[in-house]
Image (tube, rainbow, N blue to C red; front, side):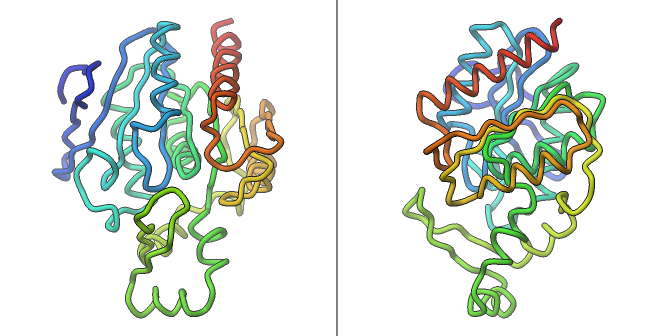
Length: 258
């Protein structure tokens, strides 16, 4: 593990598997904040970097990193699974943070956030989900794929889905779908009792806001609030969205510090 790197070049965490996770860590007081990115995104996005600036200004510890096959980390994206990326998150949190943490998960990162929290409850002070997408491989991919796409996945093991956010298509593998079934959360109560804040766009075409209402119902915590944003889509990265996220975190930090 390299020392904390506050410059443009990331540091790297070497895993026992031989993989290397790229990260940026900001020293500060606890509870720390950890940003968990979305499917095929990386730690250089506007939400991650804005939260880093927020944490520095407030003096909070902060961590952003890339899963295997994402951004500057090692590995191939098409070899990744929900379980692998959740394991990456656990490794990063365990090695690069100390004490209680607030996990902030965007889209797929909301699923990773929940899986990580379930495995290290004693380290998680609170959760913030931005258009969280638990179970998306089953409910938003497999369940909506037309028969020809399912046949392609079953026969070839891979499907390239056009992306609204990149010129490059998403690479969907049968392994991603099948392994995702081992990590489904919305079918049963989710035994997490920490404070949870969910923010979702009313016009999210990628992850319907009903996913957040299902998640709110499944969580056992009595301190869960959902903010539904009129007119907002999936990315939640406009200036007003960033301000809302920062205000949400500020409120949680004040609550936790009191």
